[in-house]
Image (cartoon, rainbow, N blue to C red; front, side, top):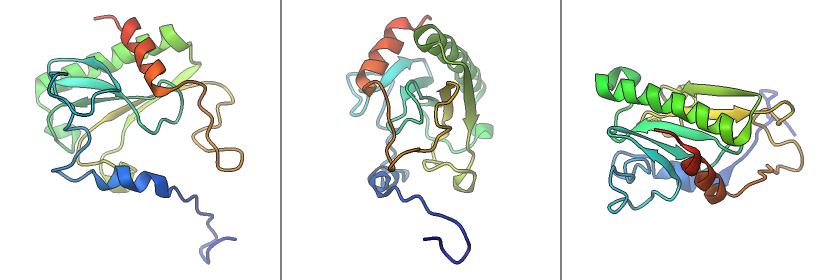
Length: 167
């Protein structure tokens, strides 16, 4: 059944617990630090840089869906300093090369949603998505019975990418 506006709704209430932690004091990205010994949520970190890190998305669109982001809690690309800007691009390039070596995707989506209206559910902490794509991969939508199929556990994906990462 559709609403009066004619749109169908895809409800994902399981994500609310994740989204609710996105305020400045409970940002899940800020719990990840430069030092793995002091991080409370770094199980999915693939690579740590000086001012930026790469982490697997907890709710991936596809296997190998990474996010590259600064340790510092800033909402906008314009808020990054020069070192953060440079390392964000460097780790994004390395992420692309690593995922290509490990998974051989046909293409990628790479992008940043600046602000909640643009689609950023955790828009208070800038993050760049790196999403590997394959022909016929369902294009971000579940295709059968509201079920998303991912052929590999996040921890296994993390280990493959971390072991293959150069630099």
